[in-house]
Image (cartoon, rainbow, N blue to C red; front, side, top):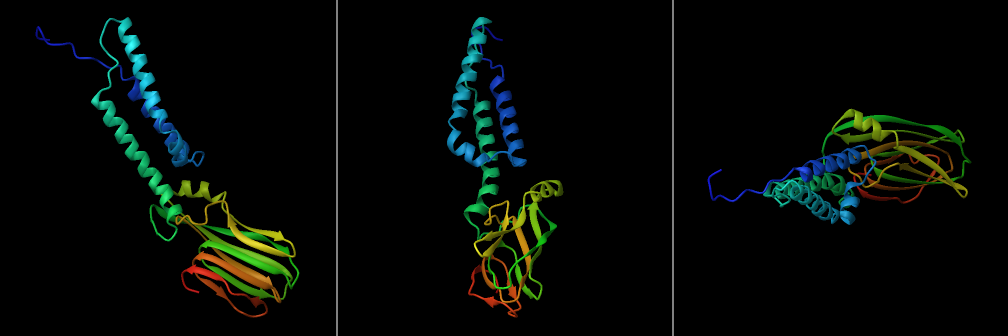
Amino acid sequence: MPNGSPARPRTSGVFSGLLLILFGFLLLLHNYGHLQLGAILRHWWPLIFIFWGATKLYERTIAQRQGRSAGWITPGEVFLVIGLMIVVLGVIAVEELPRQFPNLDINFGEPYSFPVDITPQPIAPNSRILIRGGRGSITVRSSDEPALRITGQKQIRTFSESDAQKRSTSIDIQAVKVGDGYEIHPAGFDLGDSRISVDMDIVVPKKSTVIVHNVRGDVNNDHRGFLWHDYVHVHGNA
């Protein structure tokens, strides 16, 4: 170093290393569905600056003990924080846009399909049946048998088949008894999520009263043997 040149402050890199480990761990938990990254950062983002300041104080204390200059905020650390925030905001955008704008089709990843077959349930022929759908087609047919039969297919759009299989385990179709009737709906996810659709094929006893509410998708029925009430069908073709 030439004489008269000021010593350049050095940094130990503790902050950069810990920050990368922390963000990597958070993204890993987010990808496996154990953490809602958007909700965490929405309330706790100031902790980044507290963590940053505490790390720099630690670096400066160690540097003073060693008789050297350190502990300053470097341009590289600033760019690292900004870069990581951009990455995280991108991940949150991919996660939140389908929920905030259910009518917006965002086709990230590849679609993977899984069958659904619910155990038939005995039901009175004159029962009232309310069907609530999210995205996907709903087909209703009548039968002489006094039973409720539900089959279908769930389609999940992700970046890998293994991720789709993990998410599919929590997605199902539920038939819940409510009073003298039943309510049928997909469960285990946000019905407005454009990455997930559930097609339902439902067989009901004759003389049943059927009401259908669907967010987006086709609604089909045979109009034979049961009373078909008006339905709410926001998007798609009926």
